[in-house]
Length: 390
Image (tube, rainbow, N blue to C red):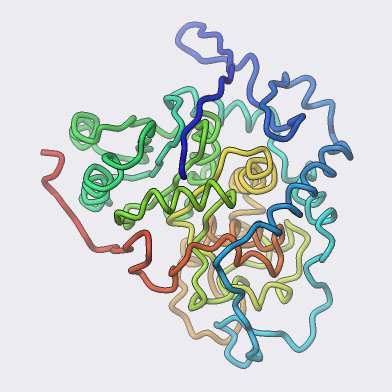
């Protein structure tokens, strides 16, 4: 049963001349694993290397998660790589994904994938604008997707709001017009917040790179007592929403990993693999994830091993956007080699979760997510309700 429980958390801010200054923030060291602790930025910065007890705790959590029962079945990839677009087994590969859970955890907890004080201040600034609740649904939108957003919000209002208690909806304004913003705030029954583009690298302004998405999810997680559900404007909910949240609560996360998706390296630039210290060929037999719908449970493990590396990568141009341009968005090219395009946030999440769970990543896939019309959601990128907010 999906139940919602409260848990207190303290984030202190000083407001001086209208500016929010971070005094202390939620850090992600936990003892025991299910309790929250606050660490000052000074204490955090002194811990350059992750302590062994944290690695040990997270490794034990990973081991337990991989023993949890799931109805999902692994994708049996048997094809060779003559068709490079599909998941396939490479004939040779100089490095495979480590089969040591501790080694995988240690890599994902490395300083390179850990938010620094400046990163945390940015995320805490955004989190300050978000109301605390048990479950937080979140999305981002701009003027170019305003009509699609209205249709998505209609789905939330009619399907989710009547069924999910103690939830709130956060809409990140990425470029609405003043009129659109006003109508949205009046009608969406949500919290509309603005993204601080002046505090992030310039590539964040290219909205299709979706660098803002991991940052938004991390900020929402700071205010979620139970879980964060991210959805793009193309997501329309079914009345099985509570079962979906149950699965996320039981397993820790739900990701869209249909067996008919292409492999990861074909739509991921090599520079991103280099940042993670991985060989692209080791990921050829894994499907790429879709990042338009996810559930993340508020646990130390999910935050530290998935969401923090994802957000850190988004803030590092050599990770999420290694020499990229808008031309790298075009994946409709002849599929004759890997790295033909780049999926940005989707590419990074695919690498992180595959590195973390290895061949058992399938355990955390959404059931029946091979088609756009799945068990829990329908994906419709063309649906609009241009007058819903009027």
